[in-house]
Amino acid sequence: VQLQASGGGSVQAGASLRLSCAGSGRAFSGYGMGWFRQAPGKKYEFVAAINWNGGDTQYSESVKGRFTISRDNYKNFLYLQMNNLEPEDTAVYYCTGDCSKALRYCREGVDFRSWGPGTLVTVSS
Image (cartoon, rainbow, N blue to C red; front, side):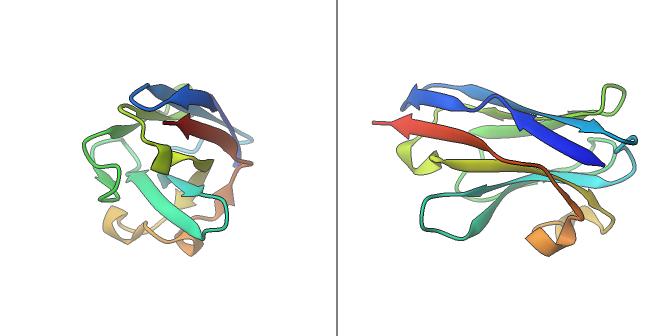
């Protein structure tokens, strides 16, 4: 499946943004999906993942309670609602898909077979 993220931008600390990811080529239902991010000069970091039907989610400790991942399998969309953004959230965010493992194992980049180009989120203090 081809993935395309959008919704990034520049905001001040405390603001909210919602990232969207459109899937095309085939339906992405049936697989886990997730979001990763890469801050300048740092490695890719797991942010959140969601199972095939949206019934289960997991988050990194750094975003738990502030970010919410969701999906709409009918529309082939994945979302990341980001609230109370902090300067440490500044990064390029990547939408990922096609994790065929149980959700608790969908936390590493290699677990996801599909990656889309990133969208930049910049949070200023």
